[in-house]
Each structure stands twice: as C-alpha cells, then as structure tokens.
Image (cartoon, rainbow, N blue to C red; front, side, top):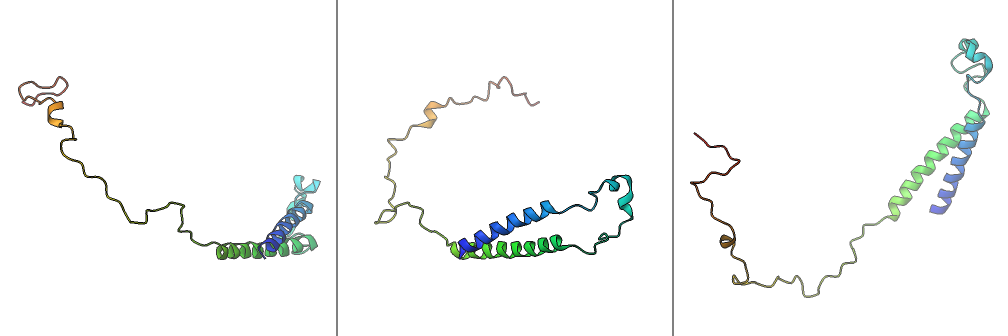
Length: 127
C-alpha cells in the first residue's frame, strides 16, 4: 500500500511541475511591459481559469491527499524500539570493587601550604 501511494505521489508531483511549466503568466505578452496589461480584470479576460489551471488545482488537491496518506502510513509503520543492542549482565548490576585508603595518594603532602605573611605577586593588598 505504501509503495502504491508513493508512486502516485511521485507521478502527481511530476504532473504538477509539467502543468505549471506549460502555463503562461498573466504578464507574459509583450504589451504588458509597456502598460497594456494593466487594464485587465482580476482574473483576466478568460474568467477564473482555463483547463490547465483547473487541472493544476485538482492535482494539487491529490498531492495534498497523498502527502497526508504517506504521513499516516509512516506513523502506523513506526514503532518505538527499546533494544539498543547493549547486553546487560544477567546477575544484575555489579558493584565497583572497594578500594582501601592505602591506595589513595595523600593530597596534603603534594600541595605547599600557603603562608599568610607573604602576599602573592599579582594580588593587591587590602588596607
């Protein structure tokens, strides 16, 4: 079903492009550039549209319908996926090994103590 709607959608899109390219614009004649086209009515002398514009409007309606149909079909075919391909251990969560305090470095021995008598070179003194 999805393939049929997709093929119809593609053919309608190509037909719309072809019909639009075949149509002539309202100001396409030579006299329109010199002001002769300004006296036309809102839709021109031919009324609200000829066969090409009516066919284009019908094809646009079909294009909208197939677009909506494709969106509905795509929404129905998608499903949430919980499997990310990560295998978890069967026994559950393993805890990290406990470390003793003998393995940790002593931070106080590595950092020199700051003396309050000597100010740092960049820091201004408070009065």
